[in-house]
Length: 105
Length: 229
Image (cartoon, each protein chain N blue to C red):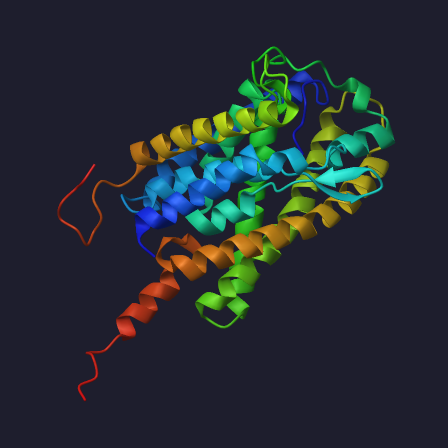
């Protein structure tokens, strides 16, 4: 599979999962939250300091439709992570690859 | 497994913050050995995919759910140091923008899901890969076992931190039992997702999979001149 095709398919999968699939995710508490509730330390959690972020709790503030609101937050998150992690990886990588003399950037 | 602010006291959070910062600093240098022009985009894609995967909570019974942590997955696909960086970026974005995982607990979460998740998962992956036949079809099952083990290990490390710096007076034994029990079940989900994703990538582009690259290179060395008929 060509690299471009591979990355396009991978990115589409991530966007579909975050943008569409996330709506169907279980809303039960996760393992840690459940255990915290069960054993009695859930109340020691503070209110999140970033709770007023426009994408807090994976919902987009100001967007009424729940499906759209969650999907939008997911897509924005995927894009942010892709740019930050991809940029970081480009910054620390070894320049050029051993078997190619030209460096395309 | 995102730890919110408040579960752990300030001294413990400072220590995990220092551990996380140190780990990320070392990872920034070590990741250089894992990343080149060809694999750098893979790191971005893997981080983005893990962010997406972490949004999908799957039910594990009794009103509890789990989701992919992604440490073993990232470590096998892009290498453990790059994987730890990928998870750190995911956790940073989640804490700052999604209010998922506390800001003062960011060091704790990077330590648990980034460092412990990636390195426990990768260590078990390497152990299992060493006993399985040396071919690309062994990579996904080995990754799945690494994923399976990485989740309860991270849960155990959380319990250790809770025993040291938990703010609520709760019996550590009860927390450990519950954490290990649930996270072993969640680990099964982690193993299934990790195995399927690694198998797909190995099928499409084994040369881009850190944990399969040496097998691909070996195979390429064996290629002989095209048979002349």
